[in-house]
Image (tube, rainbow, N blue to C red):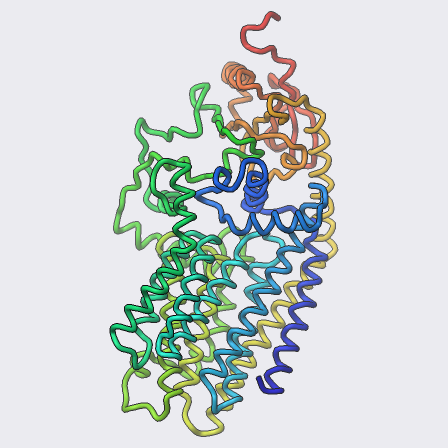
Length: 568
């Protein structure tokens, strides 16, 4: 590595560490997203019942193992769990930036052995993308495995690039397979992506015979299934049928709809004319209904409709570009800035494919690596657009896709020094804009109103946990709760060691005396001791007395209602 490239990497890493430290201070006690709580739950289950019984079809097994390791290292009580996971995620995000910096520095030396300036520009472009995606899109507050996913996809792409540069070297192909197998443990659909990316690498590699291409793919597959095979065996043996993990029924059901025998799913169990759903689980879980959401679709049929496929792509593009839950997940202007060098100077894959014989071997390699990066990134983006895509799903694939486009632009650069400088400066501008945007986004988290809101949310959570902890413990040591309305993200339930055993999807039934009484009887039969309801939905004067336990939630104690069959 040259001195100028080393200085660039040093400045990049200094900025990464500074932003990471600020985000850790901001988010160290912020409330986790609903999905994040489930990763905590999976980690709990690994400790309680072992890996084979705890592993879920839906949730990544590798990230809970990482959280479990972080807990073991710190040995802190559950009240400090948010701080521990925030620090653990900072480590992952900084590690992601290190991976991107080192990987694309390595590929820069491979692609531009005679042009240090071009390699440095490509590295700056990669650094800008990594900085924004890590701390602007993934960020510390989400508590998700996506930093792991992104790091492993980037490493897999890098291994294939090194293999292609060495005529599909079998050692690098095997490494790509092993990395793809580990990536599968972070998100199960990465097995499919790895197979497609490997096929693209073997097909695009320059000056390689058919036998070597087949051998490289076979070696890759062996490395991949060294991890996929045992995991599939664990998932399948505990369920009684062959499964590779997430079946995709959840996302496809949103698009095409789901049809169940009898008109509704067999799980959760519906009682009281469907007003109550019971989440029966053999494991001792805080959030059983949300633990493995694919279970609701196990017995469902998903009818395919071609027209809805096009609607899915349109909806996914809208969610990706403009944000799904909030504008914070939008990628419209980041993609604009990332693509503006290509739009300004032009790039055409067909044009790059034509022409006479290349001047140098490095020119051939750059061209083929550009195609591979575009193909690998495009495969991942397309995979999500055909199912369901939101912003933080795409960084693992946008990084190679955008870098492949920029590599193609540099490869087609005219020989004139002025034209080359323009294309190199474009990368520096992109990196600077992404760095500035990430710093401004991080500074925005420091606003006093937001900080006060996060502190109040933590206080509310502890107040609710204290109220729940006063309830009597049932069988298994956990207090069974029911929740009326949307209960996702109730972190206080976890702190109090209560259990969401049932829910009431329509809170209005509790305002109807006859239906409400039937609901309460059904809950008492299941040993439920209390109901949580949002303050906005609760009405005094109902069958139950609602006690305010936080700024957003009320609690009704069901112990005043005798168990069915008991004497009044």
